[in-house]
Image (cartoon, rainbow, N blue to C red; front, side):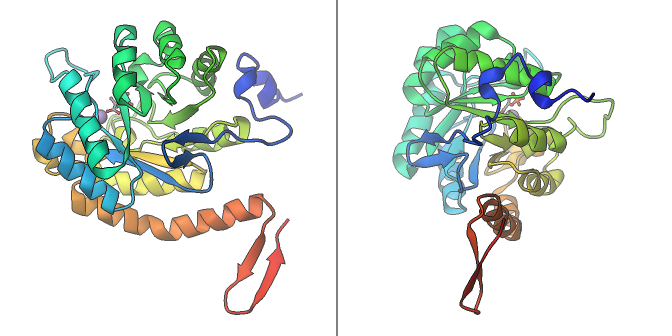
Length: 300
Ligand code: PEP
Ligand code: MN
């Protein structure tokens, strides 16, 4: 007999969707992640300067983002690459929040930095490279801040859910899962975007799931298509890298959208948002409006 999802993910019982179908909605300031709104989190890979961050923050807010992303502590593939501005970066993020009212998501890489980052950030990001750092997960969970948990680049869905379970075990139910691409034998594309993983996570867990098309693609030309696929797979939002001048970015410039590219992506997502709203209403068995006909039809 085929193994059930419940059996497959038995080590993470508290993150699995129950028979009552109740889903977790993570509230971050005035933003609800995992509800009806598709939440776009956008901004530069790294916080570089006040000018860069403010320009990005104002632009992404005008284009519809609800959360500003930006790394102050950066995990880099090379130890000789820019490692982030640290505390100065956190202060700039707080200024950007003050100016735009966007909520802030930023990565914490070390247990020692959890309380400092939690002082400034609205959401703590656990990066791909840290997903299995259980002592970091425990400390981050205990800060009480919502956690954006990125899937490790070599982690299975079961590994991701085990890490989420550890956060719940430490008293924090506000977990947002993030698919950001995994390593496969493909070399033309930085990572392989696991759309089926998003669909599966939405079927088996009650936690919100967002898609990061930027780190999955590694190339800005692919980002809008992966963003659309993320919506179609059932994601609750996106995490996207946007930079005022991507070719001069201190990290991940090749996958960062410029402002025009971000606007074009957001516009291209509009019909997909309409499809999503219809799909959510159908899932909840809410009546569908029949435009212009003055009638309502129940979908079940
Ligand atoms: C990032 O969001 O900039 C980042 C480093 O992501 P990941 O952990 O997915 O590589
Ligand atoms: Mn990045």
